[in-house]
Length: 140
Image (cartoon, rainbow, N blue to C red; front, side, top):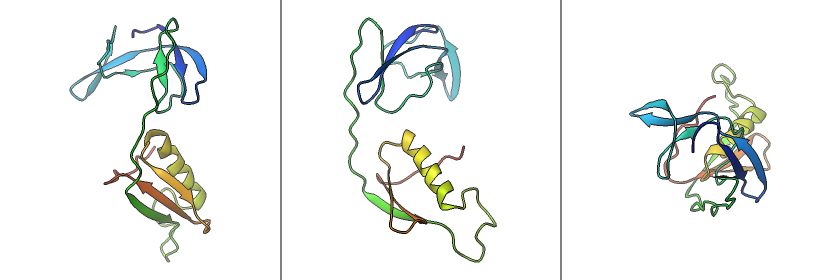
């Protein structure tokens, strides 16, 4: 893969779209550096293709073939996230309403294939399931 290369993206439902690679970035230690080319086995980041999801396949337009979708083991840990109803609610924190919490959890679903989020009968509570230890949710 190289900058300005034409590619075809296949999503998990088999739909295709065309795109053009912007930059190809490799790693040198913890730093990302631009590269002129990447080969099979390289770990890279690319720009210019818009939104990509887990299990999307980026292909050469002359050889469009999707890789099998990733399968992830079922969640092993379940927690309930509730809106804070204590006397100090709203004093701290960024996400304080149920809508904000759900929106943030849905954003995390894009990057974390092992995460499951379910709404409950209580509009202010969400059932969140994942695999093993869960890392802190990234803030945007």
